[in-house]
Image (cartoon, rainbow, N blue to C red; front, side, top):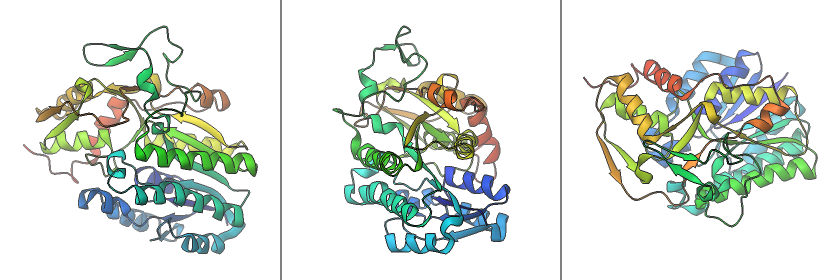
Length: 358
């Protein structure tokens, strides 16, 4: 029996992984205790997505309502399947740098200690398995803000002659900058994943994500930029821009493209703790102002937008992922969805789930 373990299995990337691998015939074991509801309230709950997975896949999907901070409970799950486990996709996290400042102990316990628990369970029970970790571009802290940025009418851009003109690569320093507490806990986890790969020669990989998006995300103000924006546009809820004149730029990648990258690595894994930036790259990025304008266009309604000069500490002014390293190692992979297609799909997929104001 071939087994895939997915943490955060009812979240955006986790549930896409369940869909994909259960669809391929794998036994998928999901670990998710709906902490997103604890972080963000009922609006952030992923219970509806867990129910969808359980009803869709039956015995192909086995759900465990377990906290990744509980090492004994994690080990019990790994003990059941042992070396039948071929792949671990670790997406469970506290995902908001705003929320992390409210409870740094919980944030670090989930992001750093929880990742260590998953790695050690892998070492003890299935050391030949592939271990995929969803890291974040926040591991670079505010280093991207020191790049030579040019202010345009609707966005910031990097100077055309700069080495990062096609996106930020993995050589950007993670040191001597402000990360936010969330960025620090995720960087700790990122380094642990690398170290288990290097020290034990495991097949581990960190994918440092840009904005990961898709139609089934439970987007909230503190996490899930594109999904939350589209929800506000569809329901006529007010939306707030935080700083940088709304010209801050993010690259956005569809969850299907993320899972395609995961599976490409899994199909031909590399040992030694690989690290890849993974986002929409130069073909799928957008500023806040541009995203609002497009949201209004595709929903045919004017949004209620307010602006505050307060920006989030450690936040990026301009971040576009450089994809050259991953594409060099895996030339068969490429971006299939751009940000506008993602936004349109969110609208189409959520007509029933979100009440569209007239």
